[in-house]
Length: 79
Image 1 (spheres, rainbow, N blue to C red):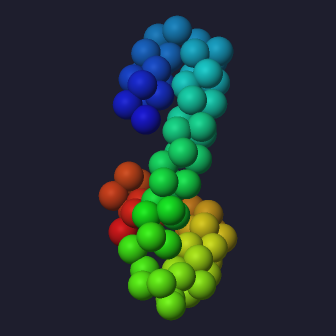
Image 2 (image 1 turned 120 degrees about the horizontal axis):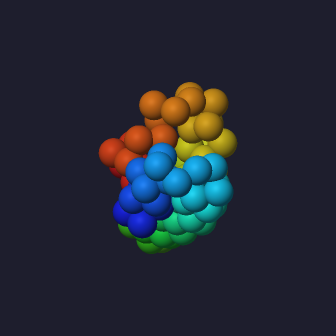
């Protein structure tokens, strides 16, 4: 994430290709972070409640994009 944010800042002076590459890196890193958060969420649930944890995770991943950019802030992840 930090590399992609640095790349975006650097890309302002260096053109669209640098920004596009940084955005691809950010997409990959967000996918990785979300996967880790999903596994942590399900692992934190008691054994008899893992289906509820999985449903909560699925709902969050489906509803979150509808909220728009403010919900993409780093502090809204893994909460």
